[in-house]
Image (cartoon, rainbow, N blue to C red; front, side, top):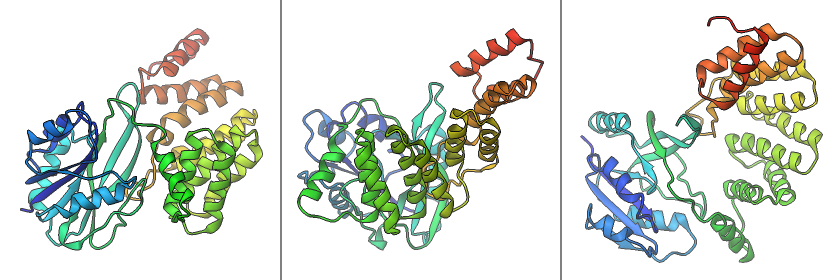
Length: 361
């Protein structure tokens, strides 16, 4: 059975750290907690679990901090988590089994990462991350912001899921501030950092700057396929905010150059045509979204609702606008099976009952 070093970097995480460590303490053979400047009880909590608590002066570089934490590891494999991550009970069991059965020649294990949820707790946004890696391979983090390790060697794609459960918001300006300091120093952002810089600009509603940065990133042609596809979607949203819907649609269509359509892109194209009352074209794209299957191993961002719930809700709208209430009600029932407690589903339920269009499922 392999041994595991848990390596974490933390700062002011007193409200979530114990929850995280409780969920993984039976899996980790050593815990390494690197504090980057906490002013609360984070270090005190960490020392309840391990005596390997280290200080690292924050230098606006997440990769540097994570590489320092990795340098302290002594076990076969390194697992990294953020303080507001947890392993749910089923994933703890699956992880324990993986620990017992993992081929020691495996270099890196990719795991699912769920980071956003609806009101019923269903995941609405997820992607795959490099999560467990063989220490002897000497993997290194790169990127001051949105740091990553480039997967290489013998990979295993595991269905084990890490769940990201925030209890408090982080500094919303931190990442953009670091990016702009890097640029002010004359540093050049590598492609992945360019992509995330554009996303930060968009999140701060600096849509014109974000659109230019996304376009530059795409035109440079050095990005990873999944980031290119996401950049097309993000660029389209910026252009919509800038009052340029036709250009937004063109940005979505550009994504088809990189790979087969993603449901997220199809839903956005459906929304474009729905907003222009071009219902047959909207139906086409929403149907395409339903035919797509998420590739959890691609590493790309996945919005599960785009592969079923959202297109079914919007097909309901399209057919209703076309006067085909029977087909509209059929798609309503499909959406209802997925999310019976959703507020929009409940509204549609009342609407179709008023039309007398609902029949037993």
